[in-house]
Length: 491
Image (tube, rainbow, N blue to C red; front, side, top):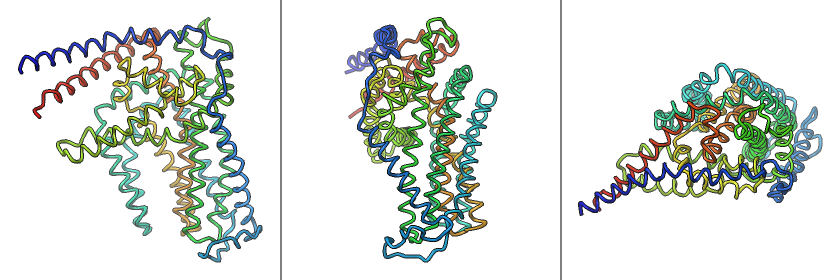
């Protein structure tokens, strides 16, 4: 029995060493894709996920029409289009007008855009400080908002924000040991983005496009808030409009993701922005593919990716801190395995494959995940929580935006504070998220390049390459130690 334990232990150690030793072989095998001339080649580009492209465009057209109707019905005249006759049995004789609430949403759009622009402006000099602020201030801000909600006798929202503060605090505690490496990766991503000024222009342009759509969206939302429907009817309409805004914002964010990922990938594989092998007008080619042949894949992936990623971060954090509660561990482990299966088909690294090779979303997600698992880089990706840190900054920006709009609404229409504040918060999250996504795109491209061929990262930043390789080695050793511990435990 002891001999078998020794042999299993030695085999685990040897498998750990073998997994590290085979990284170069695997990535070189996968790296052949880079040299085949397929990158940004027009002959290999086909329209992907066209069904979801059609669904998204039809949704935009139909929703735009509905938003204009809802806004006009209460614009300068109560029930201008006589829509209130279709109201359900719950009826309120409300004399509110669209213009009563539309300026509040204008404030939300202005604050959200300003926060996004400020974040991009300070990207190069104070990004590390801003990310630390996002991590440590978010819990406090959620707690303060919960107190304000209780003070305003909004007990449901007070409990919701207090729960959010508690979950955020527990998550930060669970990943505090990962933050130094996460900040290192984010710093290098910022370094890459800061060397590409055209990336900033893309983010600004898409924020302007989003602001135009938010002008129409907030016009309809203001009409809903001013309508004669009961609170339940207004809330249901606002939820539907919010889901639509979330999808539209995610599509625009992921379009920027694809554009920036394609450009960063090209810079890394060619050894620099001004290298002679760089194709002409790489940004315009990446932009053209993102808004044409790959746009359907972006629309499809934007439906599910963000929710699955967030759920995965939370479950990973709780799973590592459960302790010896076997019943709770089994439940969380089941959810973890389910989410891990979904991640194989919906992950943010798919967008790099979409940008570079023009694949459909599901195939791109599978290929990216199999690449990480075959090279062992998945252990490094799972350890890094840069996406979660950027999401914290996005949520903080949304909360600040919602607070500004909510405070103004409270001063004039105190019974509509939660409706306006919550929807304004979503507007702020979308706008700040458009600024954050440029860094996230650089992070994903760095990991894909490291998995494809580590020498690309070594050529770009040798010190960073050594740090990544050392961390990967430690993570693989840690996983092997856990596997040995499970195998040697008595039945």
